[in-house]
Length: 238
Image (cartoon, rainbow, N blue to C red; front, top):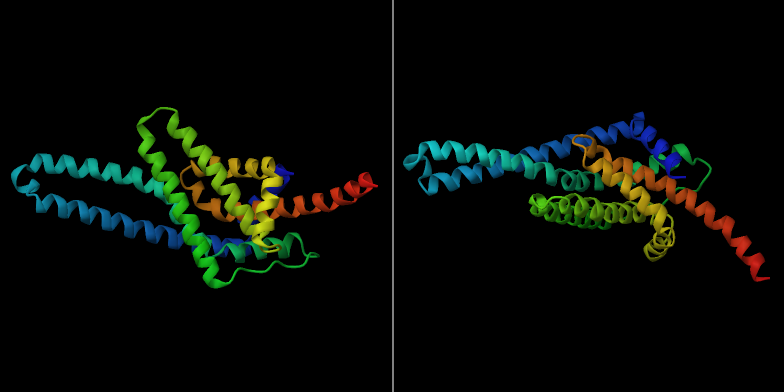
C-alpha cells in the first residue's frame, strides 16, 4: 500500500494543478529564507560594529564574518524544512482537494479546515518542526545521535501531522488520531519516507505537498481496509 501511495503522490506533486501550488509555495519559502538570511547577517554586522571588532581587529573581523556566514548557511539548511512547512501549510487543503478530485473522483470530497484553524495548524506544525530541527542542530557535534534524533523525531512528527491533516477532512480530529494510532506501523512508515526526503537539500522543499498527497492515499486505503475488516469482525462475533 505504501509504495503504491508514494508513486501516486509523486505523480501528483508534478501534475499541472499541483505544480501551481508547488511554485507558489517554493517562491514564498525562498522569499522568507532570503529575509531571514538578510536579517541575521545585518544582526552579525551590528554586533561586530557595536563592539568595534572591525576597527580594532580587521583581520579577526573578516574571519569572524566568513565563519558566521558558514554557520548561517548550516542554520538556514536546518530551518528550511520548518519554513517550507509553514508556507505549504496554507495550501494543504487545496493540495488534498486536488488529490481527492483526481484520484478518487467517485468519493465524497473532504471538508477543508476553517481559515483560522488552518492558520493555527500551520503555525503549530512549523513550530514543532523548527524545535525538532533546532535540537538536531544543537546535537550536530554528537556523532550518530544527531542523525538518529533528527530522523526519529521527524518520522513521528511528519506521520502524525500529515496523516491527521488528511484524515480530519473526513472525520473528527479525535477519530483521525485514533485511526493513526491503530495503523501506527503504516503511518510511521510513511513518516519515515518523508523524514528521509527531509535530509536531501532542495528535495525537502517538496516534502509538504508530497506528504499530504501521500497521506491522502494512505487514509483512503486504510479507510477501505477498515470497512472490509468490520464485516469480518461482525461475523466472528456471531
